[in-house]
Length: 436
Image 1 (tube, helix red, strand yellow):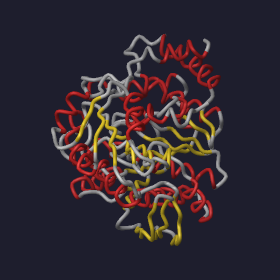
Image 2 (spheres, one colour; image 1 turned 45 degrees about the vertical axis):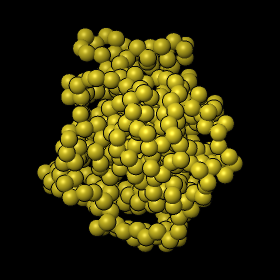
Image 3 (cartoon, helix red, strand yellow; image 1 turned 90 degrees about the vertical axis):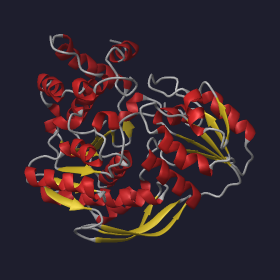
Image 4 (cartoon, helix red, strand yellow; image 1 turned 30 degrees about the vertical axis):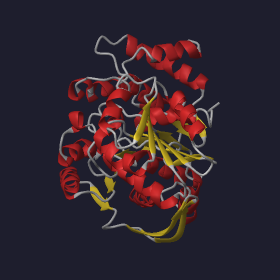
């Protein structure tokens, strides 16, 4: 197949990231992924791996961890989702995205295993996860970091046998699918914990950590907790990054620098240090210098990302109440601006009211919009109705229209905050940075 034909073939599979109104436990079947991986030779077992789940910060933790591994001189893979601009972003080896030719070649390689199977067809995410397994195996990566999609227990990445599993902070998300309590959500996330492995967790609410601790006991997995076994201290935090100290399980790290913005990234970096230190239980020791350099140089677009200074334009994929609250705190803490114009687009299965309650009060005006590529994007009319009359609010039909309007209305010392969905952020980001 040509690359355009390959894209058309991949688009033929159901994509739950964009789809609305499906049953999680009926649609997500781990045995389907197990069968696909078996048919292509179980390549995920060829490469040592780290597995990351959680409600918020899992992409940042994966990116920081990957950056440290690169800085240590390892050939390191990174698998994340969703993408911002180009779906090849999801599969990286060191600093390079998977190439168009490799995507085409690997799809050709796994297509017989899909087309010749009489069972249910895999989803887009499952096919692309299989591509990542094959790619890292063929490239003989030393290690790969995998971010789960939704949940963990039934996720396509959960056919891994990782050295370390990590769980970022758990909060209310996808409650119609993962469960309506933190305990139920934690159970889905903790499904990535494997027998005899190491699990490193961020600080969690009691209901969540009780579940994680119970699963670790059942699986005979060693549990390491940020806030208990690992501590951190913020020294300073600005719009240029953070300075902080971490006391880990095996060492102390003073004067660490992180270019990712916000105090929450310090907590994410501490979790990444816990992951990296835990590799020692598998015989892999990463130097302090690699940890320092990796944290300082880590990049993760679309998360409190500054794409313009005059006016300030900040992009962040916050998509639940907890993330929106952290975003609001970070913006008020590290940025200086006259007025804030909020560009907001949210998927309709998210806690729209929660996001509004955290972000709208700090805004001077709001532009409501929607992604053009997501079936489950909430109608701007409904979002505006939830906001009510407390703020000057206008609706737009697209992110491009929203950005044109926002930039035409703000002064050089104002801030445009684009948030509510990574899909909205990705569409806004295209005018600032095009991936080649």
